[in-house]
Amino acid sequence: MSQDSQQPDERPDYPVEHVGHLAGQAEQPPPTGKKPWFAPNSGGVGYHPQTWQGVLIIVLVIIVITFLIAALKKGWF
Image (cartoon, rainbow, N blue to C red):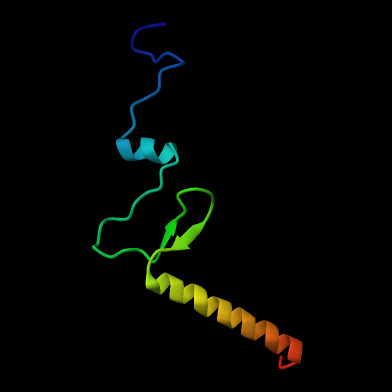
């Protein structure tokens, strides 16, 4: 093989953001000064609320689901 061709075990150089993406690191949004309502869990799978708005959304979803289950059991729908 000539020196100009790449060896099979050589990898081309990628930009840092491309390498981080391949390594499984989550892409971060540009800083806006605002905290996102939900953040990925540090351990395990999923997201958790990290602001009062996120907690409010979770509570409202639980209330709506509870109301729908009660309404279906009473025959309102």
